[in-house]
Image (cartoon, rainbow, N blue to C red; front, side, top):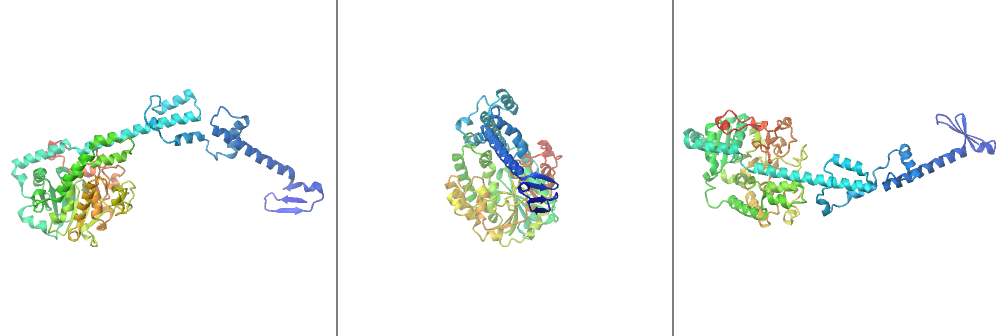
Length: 534
């Protein structure tokens, strides 16, 4: 019998055999090959390849390249060329060493551990260690570098906390100069607004904005950017709320720097009728919060010193909780907007670290669908770092009181530029809910959340939030520099939330111009206090 295979392998033909001799022959094309020779050759090469592979693997696991069998070394040289590098050529012992749990002894730095890559390579070349010794040395060096990186990161967060918590010299200078001007210059004590414009303060046909701040420079930027971008500035009323000590500088600034035809109303909290009557819940809550924080937190030095295992980001969050902002009356007063403005139906609340880049009168055209708070969600967006905030980002879901009442994956929303329907608010128990949960947090020694007003705000406005387009509020310009200048310029409102405020030296240089362009650096007060963009 003959088996004929065409050269193109398309045709196979079987011919009757002429004898035993013909039975053991196979014809391929025009050539004849012994069938048994072909079979035994394939069997031999299969066995040889498996043999080489086994010896090569055994010697690789052993890890000592200087000691290998002759066949094993041959396998190491020839095997990869024939089979390709299908398996990792890293000794398994290295994986085992690097995967071991970190012991307390390893955490303590030792003098013989290489500090740099150059030291490590010099040590390896000099000692020529086996795979296990190499892995141990590599592990010690990586752990040391991790400790040094962690320590540097924590120090960075501590310095940023100190820088963001203190009052810059130029801001303190500006407040003092304006206070002096208020005392000596009648033009700096003008009634704001003038008598003929007072009725506009309660006229719901106007667009009412509320800014609570004790920072004159920051308030001036918000006000100027708001009015400059307004299409109908004569219909804009900006209510500026400040504290008693900042009232004179704030009034002096806006008296000497009018933003006509817009209406500017400057008022200190003690001038509101509601605030001056009886006990004010926000003040009581702040006093209790201060007592609890001073008792259980121990200051920034204690937070840094006592944390040897926590991630730097966790320590940064605890430091941020100590920021004066989170216990500022200006930060908490927004929860009392219905009482502060009893005759207004709708307001837009603005933080003092924002810049307005478009006309905001369009916000009054948004149908709130009966909801109280119009806000931008912070769990959806291109920036996965800034727009990844859910309830679990702010609330402690390991506490049963939180876990039993809320969904950790529910989308959070942002304070900073919010539409508040005061009519709808007065029909709810939002304010009472806010203070109820503040009290619960104090009773639990601040274990429900740590950061100021947003966590209780998420709870109090739960089910009362109308989601608005992200165009109206871009966040994160104060704690990450991934946002480009071109991207920020496309947003209606940009928010420098975070430590790197644009008036501080730690601000991100590429983003600061978006804020600084609303400051007149030729102004005598600005020049006198050496306020400039670095």
